[in-house]
Image: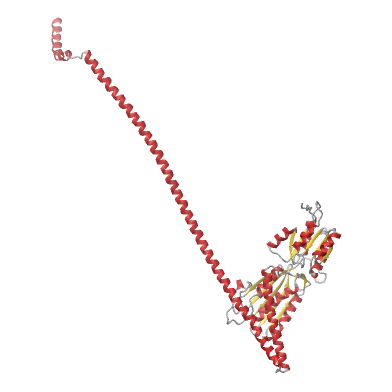
Length: 493
């Protein structure tokens, strides 16, 4: 049975293998295998070649990409530079345009100011011609009548009075012009001395009484009793008060009032001139102290004058170290002018100089050489310094000072600048040349009414160590002297 089963299985196996016989008979030969291997190797080589080419192409592509990227970056930078350059050019163009606009505005402003200045100049020249000719007409007319010999004594007196009044008016106009010329050139000087303002006001008022009475104007004065003095030029201060009173009377209608008030506080003297006149418009008030400016410069104007008086007032007051201000509620409301002048700390009415406090600016061991051509000012400075204990030699000219220096060398020099023959600048140069070399330089103080910054620099460059403005402040002068003599100033080579 076993054998029979095995035989059956063999038969079935044979039957299953019969279809596979052709395939078994078709297996490749060695030659075929070699050919297949060769073909396969060729395909592998081809693929390797392609891969190498692909890698080369990829490298080349990457290089091209990098190159192109670099080119794009460079182009982008160039583009950005061009953009920046255009923006800068645009900004420069805008700036230039703005500057051009500013220059145009400045040029327009300057042209307008020049036109205004020319207009003011033309108006002033027209007014000047009118004001100078106006007094000449009655003067020449009365001269012809007086020469005719046909006038009686009364009319001759009227004629002479008219001639005198108009001659004085013309003289005042010329003096105002000369004062303005001095102011513009920085040559308006002061002859400084202790001044009682009450006396100054009374003198100015007296000169205006006839003009005030002619218009029935009352001038009321309120002068505070005081022993205080200011240091100033009495003639110039009287000119200030006279100008203010003259304006007040001129612009106040008939039967009006003018009020003059003098009062003091601890540090200042105040003069107030108030009138009930035509007042000052708010538009003109800021220009009331300017040269050649008048509220009405037309040919139909009612009031004469050159428009210089208040400009002169301001300059004189400022030369005294003071201030002047104008107030008015408007046209028809009157005007008030207030002058404030500083009070020196050690000036009194009778004694002129109070002795300084003990130990303060003590000049007892100091010899001062004072050079001042104006006698009153020279004497004032001498008294001031002697009150501080100094030994003072006061002379009137540079020549006297140099002769004095040869005889005795001072510890310090105090010199005026605006002196005749030899001014202070030339004098200090001569003074320095006479000093012995290698010795301590003698300090020098320039004491002058020329108070501008240019004048200060000029004084220092000329050889002075300090520049003090007139009117002299006694305390400041003593302090400056003490400071300079306590320093050791080497002689220049």
